[in-house]
Amino acid sequence: MDTALTQLLHIKYPIIQAPMFLVSNVAMVKEAMYGGIAGCIPALNYRTLDELRFALRELKAAKPKGGSFGFNLIVNKSNVKYKGQLEVICEEGCDFIITSLGSPEETINQAHKAGIKVFCDVTDLRFAKKVEALGADAIIAVNNKAGGHRGNIAPEQLIGDLSKNCKIPVISAGGVGCKADIDTMLGYGAQGVSVGSPFIASLEAEVTNDYKQACVDYGAEDIVMTERISGTPCTVINTPYVQKIGTKSTWIENLLNKNRTLKKWVKMIRFSIGMNATKNAATKATYKTVWVAGPSIEHTKAILPTRLIIKKLIS
Image (cartoon, rainbow, N blue to C red; front, side, top):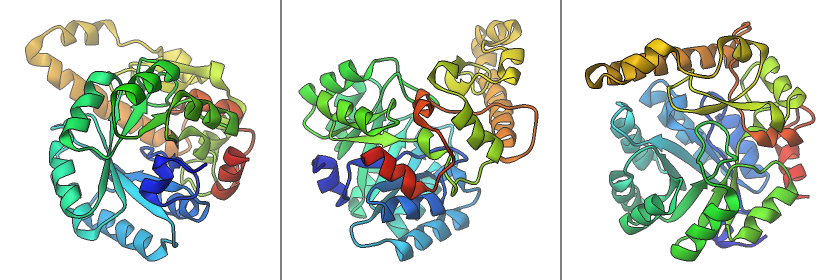
C-alpha cells in the first residue's frame, strides 16, 4: 500500500484518521500513529490556545518513528480563533495541517515556513486548482459519501477529475468503512483515504456510549441530510428525535434567510444552537440525539479499540 501519501507522511498505510468535531482526541491519534496511519484533530476541539499547545506537545512526545499527526483548521473569517491556532501550531510543529471552509493561502505560507505540509479540503475541480496554485501539498477530495458537511460529487467522478487535472496527490474523503472501499478509492486514482465515522465507535473516543452504539446499530440507509444543525446540509443518524424535529429549515428561517441584513445573524444563531445540541448529544445523556456520522458506519459492528479498527480497515 505504498502511495504518494505514505511517502509524504512516512506512514505505513495510506490512511488519515479524519478530524472529527467533538470526537477526535489525543488518545485516538496516538493509537492511529501506533497503528501505522496518520491522525488528525480539529483545532476547534480545544477551547483555549493553551489546551491546543498542550495537545501538540503531548503528541510530539508520544510520536513513534514513522508516525504522523496533524490538525484541522477552519480558515474562514467566522473562526475568530483561526490566527491564534495557526500561530500555535506553527510554533509547536506537527506533520500536516488540513484546511477547511475558506482560502488556505495564509495557512500554506505560514505552515511551509515551519516545515509543515498543508492538505486542503475541496469538493470540486475548480477549488482544487485554486489550492494547488497556492502551493498545497495534497488535496482532500470530499465526496458525496462523506460524513458531516459533505460534497456533492460521487467518489469515482471527483477523484477522476482531480487526479487527471492536478499534479499533487488526491486523498479521498468519504465512503470508506472497509478494506474493499480503500481499494476502490485507490483504484479510482486516489493516493490515500481520509476515514472518520468508523472511529466514532472506538474505545478512545470521548463521546457517549449511546453515540458509539448508534454507529453500531444504524447503517448507511439511516444517514440523512439535515439543515437543522448549522444551516448548511450535514449528515446525521436518523434517530427518532431527528425524525421528530425534521431535517429542513423552518419557514421562518427560510423567510429570514431571504433578508440580506438578517441572513448573517440567522445563520450564526442557527449554527450556535445546532452546535450546542450536537455537543450535548455527543457528550451527555440526553434525549436530543443529534449524532453526526456518515454512511460508512454500515461496516461498524462493534465498539473496538482504535488499533483494531485500523487492522479491520487494512486486512
